[in-house]
Structure formats: structure tokens, C-alpha cells
Length: 334
Length: 267
Image (cartoon, rainbow over all chains, first blue to last red; front, side, top):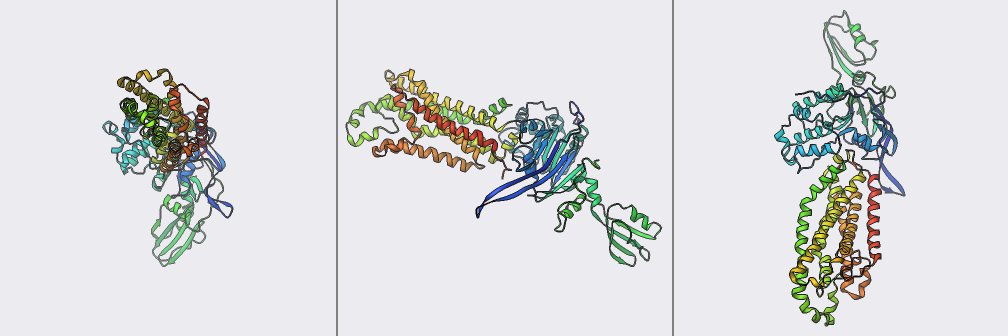
């Protein structure tokens, strides 16, 4: 298996590959009482993706992820705000953007009568560019030459997804926009895909992808944005997001428990002889300092997972946006 | 890039184009043979019968002259259906069909503009229609020779018939294209197009068979391709202008509407 080395490295640049400012999208839903009804699919979205970054875009169905992606690729026209991809305006310069990007739609549909190889050739010719990564991608995703000679209509869901990934990346785009890329892939192929993403990052290429699989976002992304009801609720590095979430702490001692009321970020929820339960937000250092020298029998600090952070942001009493103001570009990136 | 799209669109329609060409090659030879076999024999009888006379002008064609038989062949439902497979089916499948299947977004995520797609559909459609019409006319000529009535045929007027036929079916194709870029599903686009074509055809048929309703024919696109008159040496430039105007309006609709439309995720 050869590595996915691009033919020429991307020159370093400081401008973001995706810069979205106050982007909004409203759909008319009809007229009622002389007024035009509208549904807000996207509301004042502001995010940026830096060169060489893998950026996760999270939210449940209907949150506005696909709307944002479709605006970036020119399928939809924004109602407000603006977006630039690779320095080009998404409304005016769609062709230039699409010449330099690769796109995998969610649940990709392919031309069923073509063979896999013919399909990949055809889609590559529409870019008018060579396909330096085709061989290594088919190798990594275990699509044999015999498979590629079969008509796409005979492919399983997973094989279609592999072809979808290859068509999006085979021409070594500067930016890949992937909508639910691991949908339909088995765990082995998911790992192969993560390795492909890692090599994209090392080659200086950028990836912007939406996913429902929070563990994979946590694993591969430098930064994430979470949207809810079309609005951005969080945009930061994965570490920052995890550091902000409350973790469950359980302390067991031989005898009395220490008084931890002064520990920053700690909210004690239950105290019994030999047992203390609390919620910890932020750094664990002050807690460890406070219990140093105490006869601790067991200490459980639940690892911070993106899934819990995500669910916290989606709880009914979650704030409309995370405290801390707008995201800091590349802050805390891995 | 456009070459690849053009090649793929031709390839995707090749079976339809070949099948329709064969059908019109066969059909084109039939009308001169029918005319030679029956039309000449019974023409004077029918024309002298007031009850039957009004039925000799179906869509501007008849069975009692070679030019009339060829004109009848042009507006016969069989020929219209075969031409419609390309004129209506191709633009519908190429845009809203791809949209419904979900492949349009794979195509348009490449550096291919929506207007480039319109150009490709028009080029492929017009080329196919030109081939089909040529096949029918060539077959007409062959049929006339086989039937021994070639002396009644003015071959030098055939290019004008070909051009007017191309304009008519080009206009129908443009209407289908305009519908194709305006809807997200095949059935509404196909329904609107067929409604326009069938109503137009019905007006021409009613107008030609029912003297009191002759005015309806003026509202039909088919009325302005007067094949018999063209073959007999009469050409009205206003006919070409009118059909060309309809075609231009439909193409302009597609040209300006398609790039401005939102293409939501396929459902």
C-alpha cells in the first residue's frame, strides 16, 4: 500500500480555505395572511477552516449541515452573509472553487450502468486533471480491479461509498468536502479512511466533513463546529470542547472525604462517608492537588468524550452559543 | 471537460437515438408506398365526396399526393411519438432525471456550469433530431423510388422541410428543457411538457378536421410546419420566425432560470 503523497506540496498560505461569515439560508414555505412564510435553515453561520486542517461539522439531521455544504459548492444560493472557498466567492466563482475541491455527497448516487472504472474515469475527465491518487486509494479501500470492472448497479452500499470517496479524492484536491464519509463502511474500511485523512493532513490538504459518528470526529478532526437549528453553538478545537464539558468524578476514601468546596470547576453532588461524587469542569490539576496526601482508595474521573459534549450542547437547557465568544482560528489545533 | 460531458450524454442516449432512427427509416418509406398503392386510386373518389373531403386535410397532409403523404407522415402520431422520445425524453432525463436520481449533484460538483449542461443537452438533442429527420426524409425518397413515384418528388426542397422539422422539434425540445430545469421531479416536468405538446397537437388535428374550428389550428406549433406546401414550393418565413420565437423563449427561460435555482439535496 503506497502512501497518498501528492505530486506537489501545497504552498503554505495563511488565508483560510473556507471562510464563512454570517451565512444564512431561508426557504419560502408559502403565503399565509398576506405574509410570506419562511423556514430558517441556516442562521448567521460563521466559521473558518485553515489550510491543512481536518474540520468536523456536527449536528443532527436537519441542523443545517448539508445546507451549508451545498452553499459552499454552489448548489444553493445564500440568503444572507457570504462565504469564500480557497479565496473565491461561492456565489460568483463556483467553477473555480469546484475545480480545486473534491466532494462526496451524503448517500452518493452513481451512474448504475457504468462500471466502477469507467465512472471514475468519466468523473475525473470532468475535472480535466490527472488522478495521481486513484491507485493508492483503490488499494487502501480494497477495491480490486475486478470490482471496478463490474457495473455500479451490482455494488453493495459500502462499495458505492468507497467509489464515492475515491472520486472525491483521486485528483488530489486542495480541499475535500465530505458529507457523512464513513456511512456504509465497515470498521476496517473506516480505519483505512482515517489513515487517508491523516495523510491528507500531512500533505497540507484540507478536509471539511460532516458526520454523525462523534467518535470518528473526535479521533481525526483538528477542530469542530456544532450547529443546532441552523445556528452555530460551538466552534473550537476538540481539546477545548472536551475541556469545557463537565466530567463525573467519584472519590472513595477510607473514612471521611476531604472538603473540596474550594476546588475551581468542581461541583459536589453527593457526600457520604467514604464516598464523594461531583461534576468537574475544566482542569483536573486543582482537584488532584486538593486530595494529595488524603487516604484515597479509588478515584474515578470519567474521560471526556465528544459525544457527551455534543449531548450537553443539545440538552434543552444548553445555552444558544457556548460562552467564550467567537472561535479562535487554529487555537489548540493538534 | 465539456467534451467528456458531451460524449457521456451521447453515449447515454445512443440506444434511444439508434432505435428511433431505425423506426423513422422504416416509417419514412411507408407513406410513399401507401400513397402509390391506395392514394392515387381512391383520391379522385374521396375528393369528389363532400362528406369525406374534409378528412383529406389531416394536419396539412393527405394521401392523394406524394407531398401530402409525406406531410401526413410528418404529423402522424407515430412519427410525433418517435421524435418526442428524443425531443421530450432526452432533456427531461438529462437534467431533472439526473436531479431525481441524485447524480446531478455529482456532476455539478465538478467544474461544469449549469449553462454548460444546457448547451450539451441542446447540442446532443439537436444533433439527434437532425439525424432522425434526415432518416425519415431519406426513407421518404427511397420509398418514392421503390413505389415508382419519384417523379412527383422535388428533392431540392427537402432541406427546407428538414430545417422546418428541426425547428419544430427543436422548439418542443426547448420547452422540455425549460420544464426540466424548473422542477425537482420528473413527473411534473414531463407532465407540463406533454400537456403543452398534446394540446398543441390536438388543436392542429381539430383545426384541420373541423372547418368551423380552423382557428384552433393557428394556436398550434404543428400548424406552422406546412410540409405539403414546402414540398410544393411555398415557404412562409413568418412560420419559421414564429416557431423560432417559441424555441428562443423556452431556451431563454432555461438559460436564466437554471443557474438561479436552488438545487436542494435529493429526496
